[in-house]
Amino acid sequence: MTVDSSVRTAKNGFDRFFEISARGSTIGREVRGGLATFFTMAYIVVLNPLILGAGVDATGSKLPIAALAAGTALVAGLMTILMGVVGRFPLALAAGLGVNALVAYEVAPEMTWADAMGLVFIEGVIIAVLVLTGLRTAVFRAVPTQLKTAIGVGIGLFLMIIGLVDAGFVRRVPDASGTTVPVELGIGGKLSSWPLLVFCLGLLLTLVLFVRKVRGAILIGILATTVLAIIVEAIGHIGPSFVDGKPNPSGWSLNVPTLPGKIVDVPDLSLLGKFNVLDSWGRAGWLVVLMFVFTLLVTDFFDTMGTMVAVGQEGGLIASDGMPPRTREILLVDSVAAAAGGAASVSSNTSFIESASGVAEGARTGVANLVTGILFLLAMFLAPLVTVVPFEAASTALVVVGFLMMLSVRQIDWTDYEIGIPAFLAITLMPFTYSISNGIGAAIISYVVIKLAVGKAREVHPLLYGVAVLFVLYFLRGPLEGLL
Image (cartoon, rainbow, N blue to C red; front, side, top):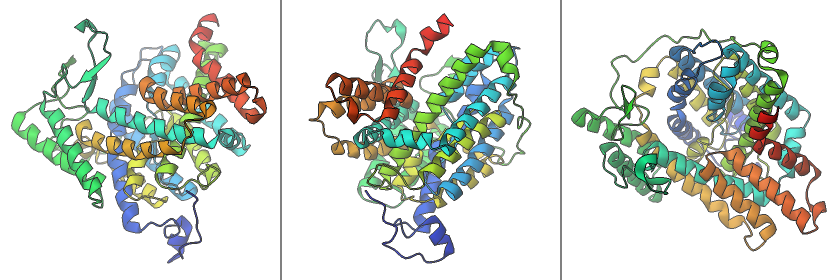
C-alpha cells in the first residue's frame, strides 16, 4: 500500500509532526497501540536479565540481575521514544533475543563482560556508519519487493511459533521419549495443565474480539487473560515452570501471575557505562573478535530489515518501492540503539517484531512509541507489576499478529520459481530455525544462485552478490572459527 500523506489535513502541529491524520490514525489508536506493544514485549525486562545473568565471563564474573533489569528498561524506553520522534514509525526497540544469548554464552566467556559489551558498542557504531553512508539503505532497496514480502510473512510465522512455544502449547519432545518427532502438543501430547487452559481460553477470547472488530481486542485479550491467570493461580497455587532448578511442566512460563507485595522499587543503574572497546582484541585475539563482531553485525543488520518491512506491511506503511517512510532515520536509530545497549551493558538493542501487535491495534505513527517508551521507563520503578503477566497471557497477541502478517503471502507469484523458491525458504526457515537472519540469508543465497543458474545474472542487484557472500560466511562461521 502506498502511503499518501496528502489525503487528510493535520489538526495541529503535533498532528502534523507525527502525521497522525495523514496516516489515518487517531491519538486513541496510537495510545492503544503503544499499550499493546508494551504488554506484548514487556517480558524482555525480565527475560533479558535472566539470559545475560546466567552467563559467566572469562574471569568467572556474573552480571547483577537487578541492574540488568533496570538497564534493560531504561535503554528500551529511551530508544523507543527516540524511534518515535526521529523515525516517526511504530517500531519499539529493546534488547534483542538471540543476540543476548550470543553475548552471554559465546562472547563473554572469551573475555570480560566489559569487553563483550564493548564489542556490542563497536557493532552498533559500524552499523551507524553504514546507515550514514547509505549502504544499509542501498542493500535494503536491492532486495526484490516480493522477497521483502516473503520476509514479512516468515516473521509472522516466526511470531506465531514464538507465542505457541512461550505459552507451552508447543513443546520439544524429551530426548528419552524414543520418538523422532521433534515437537508435541502441550505435555505428552495433551493440554493437561491450567496455564495451557488459560492460554487457550485467552486466545479464543482474543480471536472472537478481533473477528467482531472490537477496539483494543489484542490489549483486552492480554489483560483479561492475565486476570484469569491471577485467579487460577490464587485458587490452584500452580507455581512457576521451574522449581528449585527442576522443570515443572505444569507451571507458569516466565512469571507466576500473582499480585506483588511491592509495587515501586528504586532502579539499580550501576551497569551504565561499564564497557571497554579495546581490551577484547588482546584478550581473545583479533580473529575471534572480528568473527564475533561480524556475527553480531549480520544478525542486527538483517533482523531489523525484516522487522521493519513486516511492521510496515501490517500497517499499510510501505510505499510502492517496498520502503517504509523515513527509512534512513529508522535504520539510524536502530544502529544507535545497538551501541546504547552495549554502553549500558544490556546487550544490543534492536527493533522488536512484537511492535506488530501495536500496529494491529491501530498504531501508525511514532506517537505509539512515546506511550511504549514511557511505560518502559516507568517499568524501571514498577518492575514488580511487569512481572505479573505470564507468557500464557502475552503470547495470545503473537498468534493473532502472526495470522495478520500471513495475509501478505498472496502478493507473491508462486508460479515464478525464481522468486517462489527463495520466498518459500524465507517463510519456512525463520520459524523452523528460530531465526530471522537464517531465513533472510537462505532466501538471498538461493535467489542469487538460481538467477545465475538460469542465465539472468544481470537481474540481480550488484549489492546482493556481496550480501550473498557475507551470508555464506555467516552460515560457515562454525567451521571458519575452527580453522582460525
